[in-house]
Image (cartoon, rainbow over all chains, first blue to last red; front, side, top):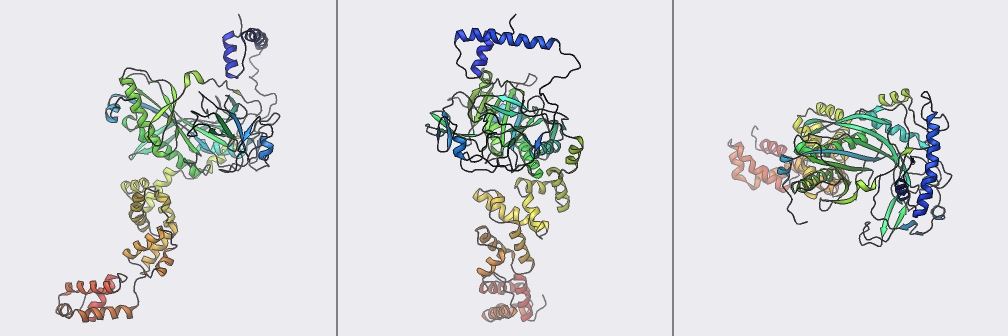
Length: 101
Length: 499
């Protein structure tokens, strides 16, 4: 059984704002399925005494002091922007969506 | 829609509302959550940004210790348990207000869980359960251009300023609050008010709803008695305490009209409009939310040292509710009197006035009397009336020193509110001081006696009450700037009568 369906891949592509053709969808679904199967195989050997790992280094509490550091200039900040106006990043209009915070 | 909305009283007699509140607080740290950019309000666009808060490739976030500490203190003040170990999570969504295409937040491992906040609604205690308090970062600000009103609809493009992106935000989420009945709007308002006061007492935020440093989303649902809770809506854009109350009320009425018509409530985000007090539909949640949260790989877990947490707990300030109770005792007020001070938003003002050297009675008299009346008339908050606690204390000092009568003091206060300076200066500039020069006063008394021989004779003959007319005459010549009691004593003395 496939670990990921064609519909799920199409959904992910939509969420990721990727324009994926029908053919690409078939190819990607197959490739992703192989990856997921491989991960599932690793899961099989996971021992009960090994906690789930999200970070490769065993560190906690890496915090910085609340001290102001230097910022970029607006020119620097906008230098990589595809488009800018009024010292702001200019982007296409947004429809059907909302701020998430 | 042309349907007439049902009356609120009828709605809450039939349906039971369940509410819930999500509050976002911008912390008053010097720097952003994950980088050293300053957090000051305003500023020219994109002047407070760096590779981290712009999400440039290769940059790495590091959490702000002061923000973690502030979140723990908020959690402790709200009686939460502090997690011994927790992680940040990525909330993935494509929207240009987040340059990384995800927001760093917390998901299933919030820093603080399971607390409560006790509030009072019409003098009755209500305990609001807190589900979680977690850390995240604020978004940038979009300016929608091409449309008529700066709103999303009709806009052709958006201009984005990332100064606000990455400012530390704390999200405080209540558990669902059932059982408030008709009082649900007041409960919502009382909760946000108390929460604001707690946050202010902690000094973690300037909690200005109008500037967006305290923002509130209100969840509302309705159900028939005995039935399951209904589908909820989430109302955003609620920017004042009054709006919190109005938003709940209007959403209860709207949902009732939908349900009564036999339709279903759609789970969705709705926007509150300050001008009309109504909500309108935003995005439908069923189709839009799929944030694919996962643990943030760029940040290591936060595991607060229990000793640190204990120290923070021991150092918490007196919380507003206890503080108010203590003040009420110190000031010797009844519950009712204290309530009127709270309703007027005068607690801190009166406290500061007393600290500046006035008695509780006098401080309360000025703030709840003359100044509250003016605030109501002009529609401004008492704190913004234009008179400071120091000025009120100074004014009362002049009264106590016999330099101003109560009536003159009220006149002086009017000029203080008008921004003419300190009470002493106004008194001097406008020559409002009580005529205490005995020579001048005696002359005015003698003049009044000479001008009213018949009345003077009556008084001499023992009709002491007749002296009132002479007092009036003296007050007239001194333009009200004499103390009536002193004048009366002086008249009786000049006429050789015992008072």
